[in-house]
Length: 458
Image 1 (tube, rainbow, N blue to C red):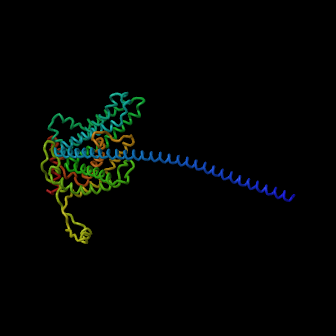
Image 2: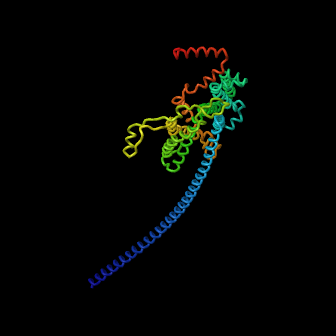
Image 3: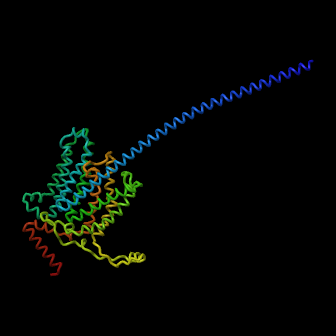
């Protein structure tokens, strides 16, 4: 009996244990299902949030892409409009340039003087501070232009007296200016100097000396260098027109090569300039220079110097640089072309002007652009885009002629060192002799007779 009871108790315990196990298993299963369901809900929420974020990001990206596309289209449209405006202005400038050169030496010189004055004004205007200018007197406002007048008087007066004194002496009222030119020039300079010092006011010293610095920079880089360009053209229009043409060609070629193939920036202060534009412009300018020199050489009008201010240039005895010369080709050049089936003559006929134009083209391509880089650096230093808006698509006169002044100065040095010299042009000497009085002429005559006799052994 006891055994049966014990067996029943054990069986009941087993049943309860099994039941508890089943219950616990069921509870665990339910808990796991609940947790799984909760995890799925959380995951679904996360997925929804992620989808919302993705949709939002995609929407923002689409909007950005759309805005970027619109912006790129606007920039491309602006570039096209600027290119059209720049092209029209360039063609107009070229037309005006050739028209002025067609009119003659005096008109070109007068145009360069006007460019000098307005370019100087553009630079001075950049140095002005409106509020300070209102507080300062008339002397502060006028001294830059008085400095300009004194330098122009000295430079151009000296040159005219050296070369055309005989013609100037036709006008009696100019005699005093001729005789006392240097003294009058100094008097103008010292007047400007005193005027500037007298105009200094407390609280504005730094500004006034900054303005003076801008004035002196413009006088040296613009006024003085334009003076040598005028000296070039009076020795022959070609000596002014050829350098100007080479700069125009180089600038246009650099722009076209740059917008077409430019990828590698050339210099930091001018980020739009590229190596592709720089190199492409070099070869374009070199090739153009060779043929343009030959074209300009056709016309006597282009190569003859201006002997008298009141006598138009028609013809003259040509300098050797404008006459064809025979040049021997190096043997290695002849052999190289012979290997590819081209037989060259031992000599070739060229104008010396064409060879000199290649030297000018090298400078115009490699060195003169630094005049533009200097102007770009100056504009970035004072945070402006252009010096002015005088020429549509180009900016001001300084923006257009920055390289021309560097090129004109080099042309003057090169021409007077390697091409022309004092023996090539004796008109200044003759002009000076004609301006002497009778007693001075007798002294010159006696000395000249003695020199000729000694030279010829008479």
